[in-house]
Amino acid sequence: MKYTVVLNGCSRNIYSQAEETASFVAENLGSAPPGRCILFYSDAQNKEELIALSPAESLLLVKVKQRDPEYYLSLLTGLLQNDTSSLYLFPGDLCGSELAIRLAHRLGGSSLAAVEKIEEDGEELHCYKTVYSGYLRAQLSLRQKPYCLSIARGGDTRRCRKAVKVLKFEELDATGFEKGSPLGEPEYEEEANGGLELEEAPFILVAGQGVNSREKITRLKEIAAEMGATFGVSRPVAMSAWAPLHSLIGVSGVITRPQLCIAVGISGAAAFFAGIEKSKYIVAVNIDELAPLVQSADVVVIDDYEAVLEELCRLIKEQPSLP
Amino acid sequence: MIAMNILVCFKVTPDLDQLPPDGWEVDRAALTVETSFVKAMINPYDESALELALRFAEDAPGPVKLTALTVGDRSADRYLKMLYALKFDRAVRLETGADLRFTPEGIAAAIAAFVSRNPHQLIIMGRQSGVGDNAATPLLAAEKLGWPCIAHVTEIRSLQEDLLKVRAQADDGFLSYAARPPLVAAVGNVPHAYLRVPTLKERLGVREKKVEIVAAALPAEEGAGCTLTGLDVIDRRRAGLKIEGATPQEKAGALYELYLKERLAKL
Ligand SMILES: Cc1cc2nc3c(=O)[nH]c(=O)nc-3n(C[C@H](O)[C@H](O)[C@H](O)COP(=O)(O)OP(=O)(O)OC[C@H]3O[C@@H](n4cnc5c(N)ncnc54)[C@H](O)[C@@H]3O)c2cc1C
Image 1: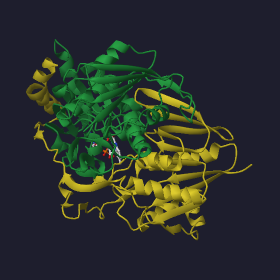
Image 2 (image 1 turned 180 degrees about the horizontal axis):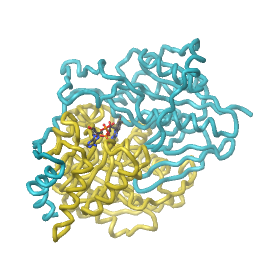
Image 3 (image 1 turned 90 degrees about the vertical axis):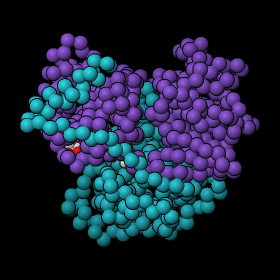
Image 4 (image 1 turned 180 degrees about the vertical axis):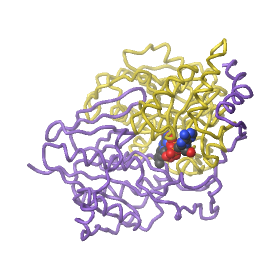
């Protein structure tokens, strides 16, 4: 199956985009003929570094003047009019998922977001993804090419990363592309770490609605720092604005993959759990023995989180070598 | 001044978190799950969309007409009545009788068809809802209408008549647009945007108002959609080892000594 990967090199999460798509390609398209990558970038990026990230042997670098999805979409629609790929792959981040769905419509194909795995079967493409807020896994079959898919985030990126040597390389300067976005150019506001730190952290402490006030969340954030953990929250905590949006963990936020995750005051809804599922080791602290997270953790403490965490923090700090 | 017509689309979904882990039973032939006994709710993203629309209407410099629309069955009617109480001008339900779980193409087409018969300038809706988890309906509605779309919206304000300020989450920050309608805004994670609750007086005030129910056939998908061909429960169980101890301090001590100390040293 002829495929093309599309990456947004203007975003600081480009490394995880590249890893995610490379791993998906290695696992699902290993026997397909070598694919192609289209990578958007702007003046601000280091071109050599971007080239090294290509998950495909053939690379088209497109220099852009805007970095919003609507603009990329106009560009792609023009670029791909006569392209013969049957499959367009996008990373599972916000931009990639939007582009996959909208591009499919423009190219007369079919689309699916957050796909974990694919299997080609004659005239159909079977796609696997979680549904029902993450409680179930569905097989959904697409018939109409080109297929435009965004990849489920949080795939195992370390295992499958094969170094790809770019053999064919082209450049396109699209900065003069005027028909761009019907919305005009948006202003971009960079976020301090935009969740990237949490994504990479080896040790995380996550607080849920059981930690039920701004003050207590602030205290836990301090505890996290003292223990050497990166701090994250569940959706209700972020929605109360007790912690910034970029610390939200789950399908609607960051997908983490730490060695150690301590989750306190969290029931463990599937939409949340997707964000810590890749943790090597999960500790849950909850007063409710029946909370779903109690079953999905490696070890659990059934008790009030406050006293447990204060004591744990003291013990960790006492150790001569902090993580 | 001509009123700005805003359409807010929402979906009533089962609150799937209420199902206990062993309560998931998939009918493998029909590929369905029994969720009818679970409490219903407005999809959380749509709840934010409805609230943002109400705030927009309150702050807009000119007149605004709000229509709430859902594609679904009778279970949505009590929410539509509540939206009347919250000052929505119209509350409409498109009745299709169809299985709506994996049909974002069809739902988007039904919304687009509604808008072509009932002109609106701005559509606000949540970016994704549970069950289907398609994250596609607002994007496809925009495509079908040929309108621009801003996804992951966190704020919509009126700058002047006909000019909107829209802020949206991006993967490494935020994008702020000064946009002119028509526009589809797909609402993302918005802090402090739970839907307000109408007072009893407001509810009584709209007792006689009827939800508009419109029969709508989901347009044929012409192959662009997807077909559900399998459905399985995901088993996420791990060891779940319980730490014993008489006090929280004792438990923390055991947790640390037995399970964390070594792991932390290796980080
Ligand atoms: C489309 C969609 C997307 C979603 N995306 C996300 C997402 O990305 N991330 C996310 O988090 N959620 C997401 N959700 C929401 C999710 O379904 C849950 O509602 C949410 O995760 C619940 O958060 P919580 O566990 O913090 O709160 P709750 O479910 O209220 O759980 C609180 C827990 O704290 C425990 N507790 C209370 N007091 C104490 C105490 N003193 N000590 C110890 N424990 C205590 C309680 O026993 C309970 O288990 C999404 C929902 C939908 C529909």
